[in-house]
Image 1 (cartoon, rainbow, N blue to C red):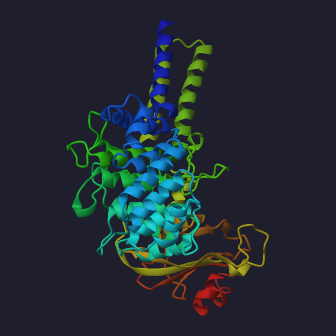
Image 2 (image 1 turned 60 degrees about the vertical axis):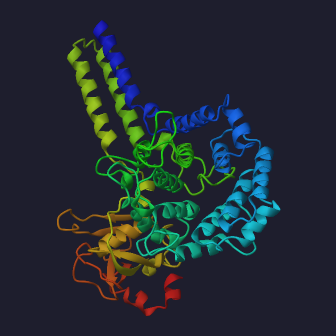
Image 3 (image 1 turned 30 degrees about the vertical axis):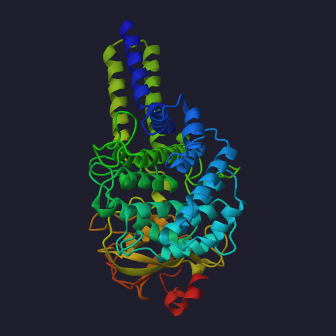
Length: 539
């Protein structure tokens, strides 16, 4: 009997190791990391506790970066007196003299964070400053508008258009030059994040922007920024951007490198024994690096708690997450599977006990089987539908041109017996996509569907370079739904190719149409988008 209870204790310990509550990627773990930086600052400032540090060092002495710390503390759920915060910001503005547009917008954002959206300074900054100092003034301006600050001169859409127009050819953004910069690209995505999935232009370029970040990741998980320098600040900005987009940096397959290292592992490279962080690996304490590590941990905590993105200071009352797909611990597939395996193991042991099976080997077998399955699940990438449709599973693209694609079902648009058939017959409007080297028509469809959250079902086999793709359904509209001759076909430049979509390699300038036919293609010629103007094609 002693052996049995020892075994149960072992099972319980195993459950504790692998359970969701004790897993490294939890909100509690993110909170612990953020709290460690608070504790460091309390000690380093000579204060007695957190409240003393906030009131004495941050709000009274206004230590460097105090406005960011206070904004992040508010976002971390710490009690901050808005009146004291406002007074400190206004004193800082008064003592700073002439401010550049970006700094002016930064202070306006801080005032908005303490409830001053109608403040004259805030309104004037939102009216006058966005776009007057390049990309950074557009980023801060969009953050302001995202928080509901009014501006007669600018709208969120106008700022987004300006930001997208500044995108570099490699997919990201930079303050200057022709090549994107990781820090600026990450900060840009933070501001754009509330519109992911809602702005087709943004959704079309988002995969390439994320890919530009991924290319800068090192084998250790951190990132190379401006001037080819690896730094904590660059890595922290990527973490904040991923969290804003609803992508957990410890679970997102695109940013788990071949060594199994994540951006969170990258940040830890800069952690020092006293709780602070360095700018460079194995360097001394750096206040800016420590602050930005704190920002990254708060962003991660907010994501895992299902809260709004880091720079949204007024979360909707409904609990809807702006700019981030709410990640519920209860619905994470990996956690659910591990929970199920552990529960099954416990039930199996109870059954063995009830059957009076006293042979220790039976229980060891159950323990070993559960341990192996849990280990396999722990190292396996399991995506939710939201993760899949985010487009994160894409491989690196060497851009060689631009193509356009549309998905239409005009032949059945008047047969409104399905909620998945748009009245216009247009499932995907005519949309431009960057073309990757070697991409096929099937590759493009898959990538576009993921970016635009369109369901696609391929029933092809797995042989060949891209597989023998057979598209059985798009947007839940399937073959044979409207007769024995109905189904999906594709055209390139107005003609039906003679090869499978998985084998048709696209070239720069191609136009790809996926069309639903009820008569083996004989009924779609009149709906060919080449015969329409672009405005008509998008109606």
